[in-house]
Image 1 (cartoon, helix red, strand yellow):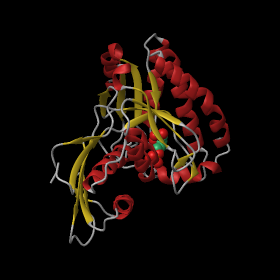
Image 2 (image 1 turned 180 degrees about the vertical axis):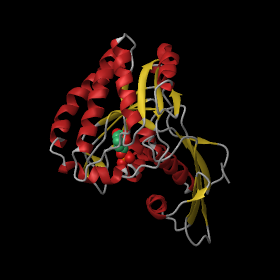
Image 3 (image 1 turned 60 degrees about the vertical axis):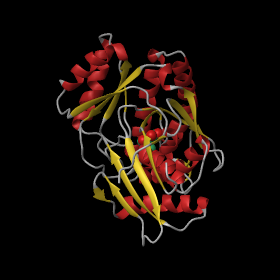
Amino acid sequence: MSKGKATAVANPNIAFIKYWGNADDALNLPANPSLSMNLAALTTVTTVEFRPGLPSDMVTIDGQPAEGHALERVVQHLDRVRALAEIDEKARVVSQNDFPAGTGLASSASAFAALSLAATRAAGLLLNEAEVSRLARLGSGSACRSVPAGFVQWDGDRDATSFARQVAPPDHWDLRDLVTIVSHQHKQVGSHHGHEIVSTSPFYAARLAAVPGLLATVMSGIQQRDLANVGPAIEADALAMHGVMMTSDPSLLYWEEATVAVLQGVRAWRHSGLGVFFTIDAGPNVHCFCERSDAAQVETRLRNLPGIQDVLVSGPGGGVRLVEYYLF
Ligand code: PMV
């Protein structure tokens, strides 16, 4: 791979225990530890090239020139890489998602994980996994969890120590996430703004107090591959986070009618003996978890609900990695 140009691939991740609220907004230092699984079936591919003589950074995302806030965030991240590598060149960046961006499917997580690895390599830097994760965190907090492979925990309350570490590799547990898409609309309020207003919710402190117990349950449940223990804990934390969102000022309500139809469906199927559990990020789409052996049945049931646009089925994914081709 020639120095000056590199391509990285990353998978988004879905949090079992959510990151919602910062101890430090500028550095994306989280108020609580979070735990997630990378999603093998969804990918972001990003090529970066630093070019002498380029007047400004040129960024293309999903075939469109990036502008406004999206462009600003990428340029800021390239500035971090330029400062680390002590270079001045502007960059050409092309990034391609194979899933809808901005709908709560964590496109910013895979985006900043892939950008961090591709840009540092293109700038001639060889960072280790912890260093790439720490850098990705500065772009978007949850992006640090897309750097290690498989099941991943992020904690650490200082800039130098706040990055993600692997809890179990992807082949540890053949869990399935059925990503149930009810809307392809770009979300109205990004998570960045959501993190800034958490403390306006009277329920924020209550959720934070509940996290350590839920985290311990999810952690031991992953180790034992025990969905009957992991499932209720991830539902409880997702609902607590959405409780905080809905009761923030301004109130954030990401759910749509079809979101609620999925939650009610999942609960009814569970009462009839099917092992399926949900979580939701900052958007209307629902992630439904089950063992691989139940995935086909859960998918059929989801597709029969009203308002479902698509169901993407994913197992646990790898960490961010370099590939030997370029997007331009
Ligand atoms: O990384 P951010 O700032 O986009 O925040 C992610 C927030 C959630 O997706 C809602 C939760 C999480 O832990 O991924």
